[in-house]
Length: 485
Image 1 (cartoon, rainbow, N blue to C red):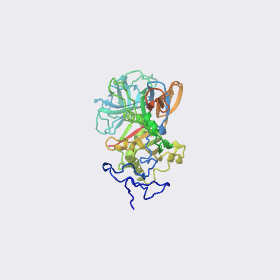
Image 2 (tube, rainbow, N blue to C red):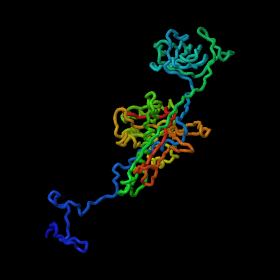
Image 3 (cartoon, one colour):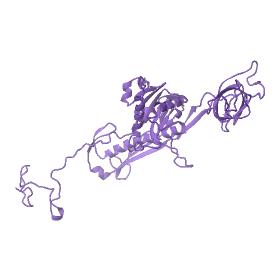
Image 4 (cartoon, rainbow, N blue to C red):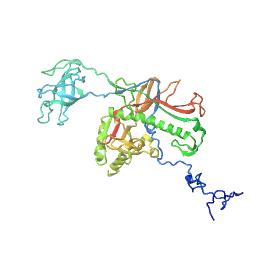
């Protein structure tokens, strides 16, 4: 019995059954010799459902965890940050020749001297570790000023011998109080040779002002009218939680997801354009703000252990000392932290209070955080997918790679010009352009002449996306950026 009958010998059957007279074998023959190459009778099995081989591909969510979004109406957002309360100076110069009598201390040309006569100061030598307490007997106030001081207890400020201050630059001083004689006015000094009468320096509070500008982020998806008429379905489960069958708008769905990621990535990676007169000024993102105004930890590894981490804590002590902090790390740095904590006998990682999550450990774990406490600080650690994804920073490992970021969980009190009152805001938040006429937080609209749009003669449907926003990184001195060696 031949299952490959010659043309003309086929006899169709009245019922749908396979017989030796109606069996077509389409996978034989050759088109060049007149054989059958029309199709396959038995089609391959096709899986309708799309395979999610990369899992959840979206990267956004970081800013939703640590910050907030608020509208603004201007091309620029400006905020002010407090300076330190107490008076102290680095890198002053002790002039040689005073010995243990009256010594002159000069300030750098860019420094404004506000130390008054009769103030008492501590003079510290960072090289030798020596210190001396002194009374200020004379002061030249203002920029590039100087003071004359008299050391207590016969200390010398111009020799390295013994426990004395070395003459030269690099000396640190700070005011710890004042000392007046009986019956004298506020600005009177009479302590012997070298003493002068000077006016009292009234210290005006100073603040530092920062600003950032929003950028316009846009994207578009286009499908022509002919392709819209050729329907092909595929079953999908999208990253935004929806599932089902999508037609050509699957590409539109992925364009939207990619655009939403760009909204966050632009706020993280943004840079100012330093070219003078550039038409595009850029915006300051999180990484740029921390590297400019915050703290950078280079080469954190488990081998360094707790000592290196404690050095970070000591630096945080000199800043705002925010009690609760969040660590967003790549895989290797997260493992380094795990190794560091595992090496501590007694379990230093245990016993932390999850105050940031309403003291609910379950809530913290549901958000992907694990906590530990060191000193007076609580830390909540989680992986940051943006630093692990191979299509973004996960594909960059080595020199100067970003390996993690420490974000304080506190809030700051600022004056809101729109509301006309003081409000509390997270240190990290997004400002987007909006008014009663137009909200540019996340706009999408259709143009063209297909798919329900009737705005032009274009034989296509255009799906447009737009946002205008910038990131406000307040108190960047409390942030830490972890970088590779």
